[in-house]
Image 1 (cartoon, each protein chain N blue to C red):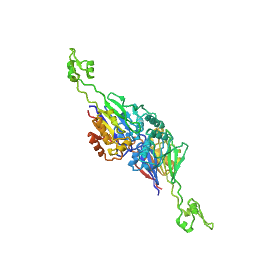
Image 2: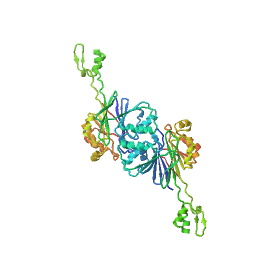
Image 3: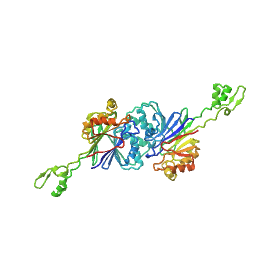
Image 4: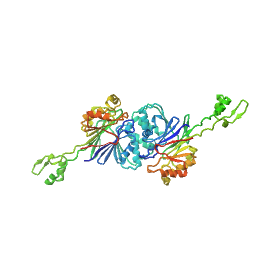
Length: 306
Length: 306
């Protein structure tokens, strides 16, 4: 099975603490490395976690509150200093590129590599990128300033044909391709064999959704229905639901409700307010509604199973 | 004696390491707290060092390379979130305020406190501020982009009159003031007593100079002649003097030469290249020229003695 791995780089919220850095995560899939959000200090956190910043292919910035992006310019600068030449793709709010360019200009830095910047669109769920393994989507969430969530989804894999059948029937290449893409097989005598009798079942398509910072609104669930793993913010416990609503955040109970509505297989909660030193009550509150919940803590690694 | 304390927050250079954060220092003098440079992660470093960011009165930014200021916007943002209302004075290159304002605008943040921004001038040594204890100076140094050093100098203290003399002569207030400011005393009969016979010697005026990043040029020494403690960069060892010159930096030997020329009492070297894990050779090289040298390492505290 191809590893599909989420590493929590920082799980805190606006005010960093000694226990929890602000938001950043790494997604690794078959040699592709994605960085989601990049709070202050992310490059040092990655060094501690032994994840090479040189290997980052694409960066996704959810919104322009500092606890989600203040570390990006430092990371970009270090990549320049250590000799990166491969392009870096960045997906983020349109103002981000102006902020980066102003800082590069002030330091008279001409990067040795190219940044391909892609401004996120507010218009519903968007396919923003695809490679041979994954489709990448953005979707707008509900926060004080424009903010996006992201969904990373495995593509359909080709069906594998039973090799005994290939050998027996001496299939030619065009026929093999047709069967792999789902066609039934018809032999020279006009006898048809159903596709599912001669191929193995397709692997389930795994997916990961990242959803922070946002108010709770169950309509968000349509963006990631059936997701394998949902990361959803739990800034507060539910007795502070009013504070959560006022500040465009969610509670640990609402995170669980979202996972339930979205038919997620697993829920990770994070973006914890700095007021919480003990997170067990938030986990308990979430598990009461959605048992398959885990805390996303700095340094935690989650493998998405088939 | 009033404490005059330097805390090294970060002593590294452009590429941060797990051992050394990039440049930042705190100067504390009689209840006034100054922050010099503010690399990425400074707010977390200060938390580890138990220095309250709320107590910072003035910030000094030497130049707009990221390893000297990328942490400032995060610190400003956290001060807003934790409820600062006292104004914050910032001295720095003129472009700095545009960078800060663009980021505050992107996050739709209206700070709860006022920033008093003062753009540094390239025109020689400038008195940029004074309070009841200290005079603050900036001076241009020699780097790839406009860069400044800073000098913090105790003001002249008033002379203290021998209290026996005050009682014996029944001095009135104007006379006491005159003696404190250095006048001799003449009694009703026209007899004069020299000031130094009836006052105690003035304390030496302590001072601290911060000088990084810069090429070596002995003319810089005129800006801080006779300084008590000089912090001067030692990015490289002297066998790399060519690299130092090309990159507008200095060596550990040049740091010592600068301290010698400036008649400094003590030298602190820092801004070490990430290539050095063992710093003893840099210290040895510097001490061979200027024995009273110390390494400035993250977390080190230096008290400037009278």
